[in-house]
Image 1 (tube, rainbow, N blue to C red):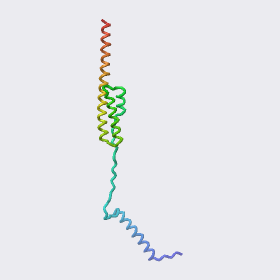
Image 2 (image 1 turned 90 degrees about the vertical axis):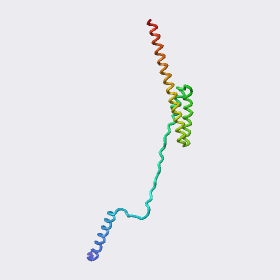
Image 3 (image 1 turned 30 degrees about the vertical axis):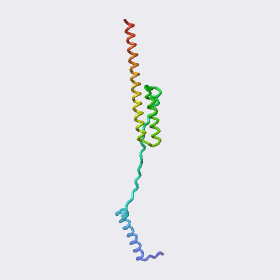
Image 4 (image 1 turned 90 degrees about the horizontal axis):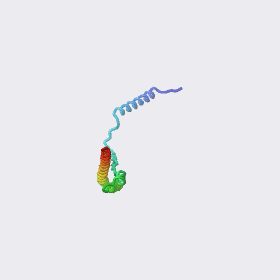
Length: 135
């Protein structure tokens, strides 16, 4: 037979009610407030700045459109830009890449003008020859 006294039952019941009340109060109040200073950690993430070095474009201009050696000079500046980028000098790499880009654009423009002039010249010669044969 189990024999429990009413005082013991009342004490256990009141202790469990007190614990529930305390847990409820803690959850209502939120996390404990401390008087110590709050510390935070800041992580700086450096994004990689990509600098196009235009090596492939310069190599193409060197091999196929090398008017006034602009393609070769652009290739030299592209290699310098890539070297600066490998060393970590982003500003120097951007400067050399900008020069290489301008030289590549110049070489491409000159080549396009030459090709366009050749096409126009061939059309003029064929139309002149055709009109001469018809006369």
